[in-house]
Length: 166
Picture 1 (cartoon, rainbow, N blue to C red):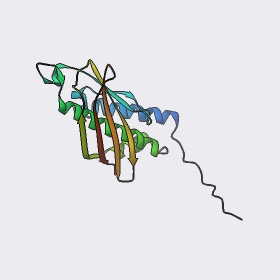
Picture 2 (picture 1 turned 180 degrees about the vertical axis):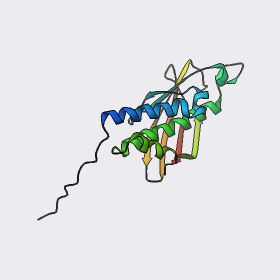
Picture 3 (picture 1 turned 90 degrees about the horizontal axis):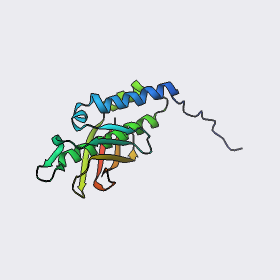
Picture 4 (picture 1 turned 90 degrees about the vertical axis):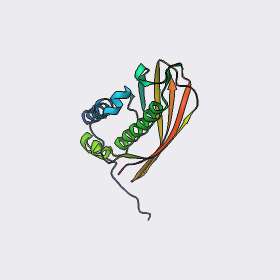
């Protein structure tokens, strides 16, 4: 007779604790990581399947004064932040039994290992949307593919990154 496993499904955090996690991640990304504040990053979606950050064009972010283009360093920093944000939402999903505090504690060990940015078009727009896909989330390393679009939906840049997650 074959052995059948009766493993218990992973315990999910309560709706209240999930709301706490979403609030904590939003606060972390928008306020506590002060460089994200300089960039003006705002959380648009915490859905692990389609995480999204947004920021508005401002004079402080211009890289070429004659054309008013977004600085390449801003593009790179926004995509790096997006990769970390996507991994944070994925870690929350990977550990559904953990509290918001436990998930945020995991973030404290995260850091960028490698980052590649491909600049495809000029960074022109009123605002920009960064998205990412987690391509791998292992025990020690996570990988992402990121994209930056302007307000007209034009793809400005793509990125690929690896992060230490433990």
